[in-house]
Length: 124
Length: 285
Length: 135
Image 1 (cartoon, rainbow over the protein chains, first blue to last red):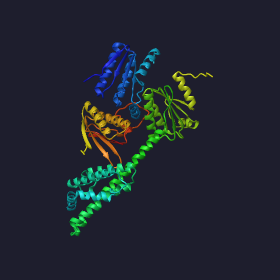
Image 2 (tube, one colour):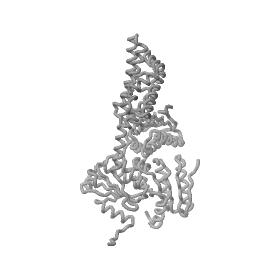
Image 3 (cartoon, chains in turn blue, red, brown):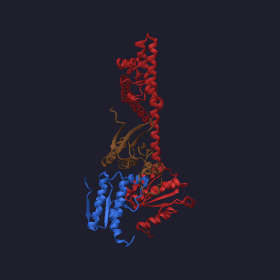
Image 4 (tube, rainbow over the protein chains, first blue to last red):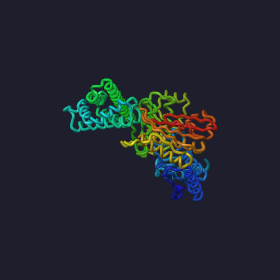
């Protein structure tokens, strides 16, 4: 099974999801990201889902998990590029992706990560 | 296959050209008003239908079971005929008249071949009448369906026109909602607004509901869904134009605005938007 | 004119089958010329229900039918398994849009994505969920 590659740019990890993932692939990504955040001490994770035409509850939960896990490992996660049809469907599905930060595109996502790095409070 | 349908099949096989010519004549293709291209098109349509009927009969199709798979090619041809006529603006009457004109040439060959056997003639005429009537009925119902599709499309266009998405300034969009907010309306607004947010890279959308007469739980739900979708994509939202009565209704119904910024007037929303985006207005004159 | 298949079925036994079901539903909704949002909703609902069948139903199948009632066209999908069944159907279908947590079987969510939703389940015998979207 192919694993989704994780790129490192400074203290940010970049992931671009471009395939219709099997459930196992999503779980593997979650695993790999947790390991890599820990190993590199990354402060930011940017997940680009602009190529995803379908985000179901499994992928949604995966994104929420990554977000939570990264936060515990002292990194901020931003999901970028959600397609309008996907957003509409997720809302109807009732998945609020609570706790997952989102931005319109990679540029905005990076801005958000920079900002969050500066304003990080000690306790949440 | 009944003896009657067998007879019709044979007539169609033996006298195809003659039947076609007479049908077109009956349908007025000789009319000087028609262009050559139209006449050719009409001939093509007639040929397609005639051959479809012939094949269907060959496959054992029963005129009484017009919905069965044996007749699907004929149904398709009739639908095509109906749609193109509807698009050209012709009436349902004209379109079915064309199909009904198929009867006369069939009757005349029946007369020719079975003129002496009255009982048999009657039976075959009945089979033909049943078949062509069904074909005409199918044309009419497709016609109506096409017209309804056109109306639906126009309604959609109207919906989109009545909810314009305006770019106020860099990064801020505004949507003045006017009229009742039902689910199809909300759907259109959501899709248009979200797409515009992506296209313009806006960070903020102001949804103004001054023009929305009532807000009940359903309307509020639609609004909240729209806001949730906007936030999911990474943009923010302000709801403006909340009249006092609506504010009261919202509280009474226990609707939770979930931390959405709300302002009573569009002007206030604009001010908040500018503040959030880091803009100030200074008077220079 | 060649007749297009108006019905069919495919197995739902593994994760690959879940992906395959999404791809099939995409192809079918595109064939029916659904709008992009309606395509997305149907495919997402199918994904949820396919996963239920594989994960909770012990494997089963997805049957699809192209519908045409003379006035409109649509797509109907049936997700069937011979698994443990759902003990409390009413609870499984409890709607609560604002809660957004505890997806469990994802049934109320999927129900909102489609026009028609039918659930038949007998504990110990199996489950069938049928969903329909009209154009």
